Amino acid sequence: MATLAGVHLNLGGIEIRSYAFDMKSLAFKGPVGGILGFPLFGKYVVEIDYPGSRVRIFHPDTYQPSPQAAVLPLRMTTGPVVRGSIRVRGKEPIEVDMHLDTGSAHILTVCSPFVDRHKLIESADDWVPGTTRGFGGPAADITGRIEEVRIARFAAEMPVVRFLRQTTGSFGSELHYSANLGSAFLKVTFDIPGSRLFLESRLFLR
Image 1 (cartoon, rainbow, N blue to C red):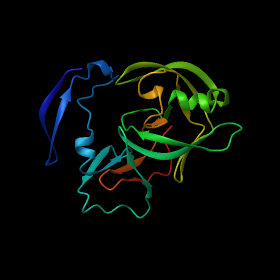
Image 2: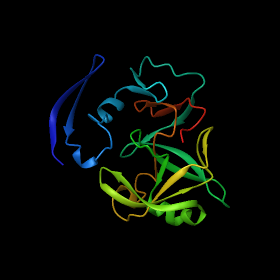
Image 3: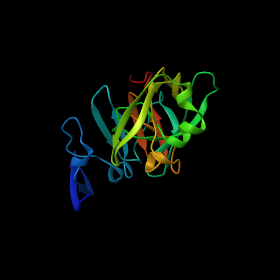
Image 4: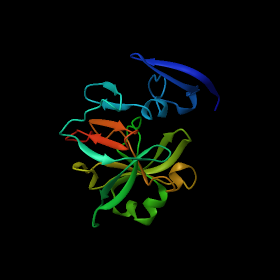
């Protein structure tokens, strides 16, 4: 994948210095001009409001979170990770380290070792084989419904979840996290400088 260094990006007066790469291999279904990553999120507090279709950027020293927001500890591996849980038929809730992926349309994509260790496919309903696409290219998966995905006090009931079947790449191990959490929330604020995540949604998107 070819990269171009020394790229300057201006977002509402905020100057970001980063690099760019060719995204043709990602094969997005619609037009996508770029991906914002750690050069922005690692320096500022970033609020993503999905229903309002807007992003707000704050300086960490002046940001005041909403009193209604749930606050979760956030740690960085290859990206931001929070602790949540899932519940499948016939089992107690299982804690999961979830990597936050705001560009994913899937509620949850689970790494293969975690799927096998907890026998998640056997406990899922309405499952069918499919394919997950990402930076590493397409990967075989199985989609099915489980009883719940939960983060703090927010939960998705009977969501469709993707169980990865690959043995290589980021989803072939649990080195950094056990699942990938997509845009399943309504409003989320990343405070990576303060190692915090704020959630203000009442419902998950289906």
